[in-house]
Image (cartoon, rainbow, N blue to C red; front, side, top):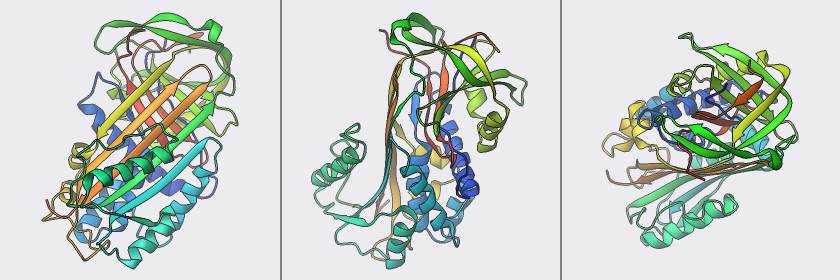
Length: 391
């Protein structure tokens, strides 16, 4: 019996991107762990790639102790020679996948002058040019940003910022948008979907529509550092370059934090090396998640407090017009999984301103999910599912 699953769209190094993407993946997984510490029995959906991309754009403009802190916590620096090119290749590789759209955006106050070197770095690493926005009209600026996000998530996230989210002191908004739509290589038969009970993290049970598929899967059994047994099963998407990995403990009542604490790029690579092709019957819930995450507390807890303080933040590589600090770091994610496949959308922003082995595998208990691109290892989406809505 399986109680937790981790769901990944996977890709491994095809163009020499392994080192950079491994560092980005490890950082994203650590942020996810921080986010879930205060949401142990709640649902969370997250895009590690989106969050890392936005913070990397800020890192390109950081100097002094702020750059040192970002480099230390993130594990890499795009300011190093050749790293911006690696980021460019990574985003280009991901964007070439059918059904996957990725975009980076920079909205800058029209009266602020960005340094030429920073603009060039944004183009080299993220293929994006700054768009001038009149932040002295905050409501209008919110509409501009929301239109950009809606356009680059195919309308899945039409209102990223709520009214009043931006002020006339906003000078810069760094953005990333992801949209993924993938069909299963072998779809679930909707005629076999039936209502079953899901055992929630809080001890309650809720009926869910459970999908069922009998097929040959890549499957393996593993043990955590603390001796907790779990298994991993891979469900491929059409084209085989993306897949979902489902992770579940053998024993019930094992908290998801046991696994999210140990997740790393190296661990995921180990899974893939050791999976064996076997016949299994997989039962998993049809589900939808909508998540809004404030990343500020998680990033502060990881050692990035100074970049949120106007007195200590150093983003002097961006502009000398105004002293900048990060005021907000936000993300919205939508995930839908059904018999045909998966649709996922994510939008992430940082806002800167100038003042302060089982024959039947049944996923009927809380699970983790990740979506990863195989050839680069980029984790596009992830989350935890603890509490379904009654159906």
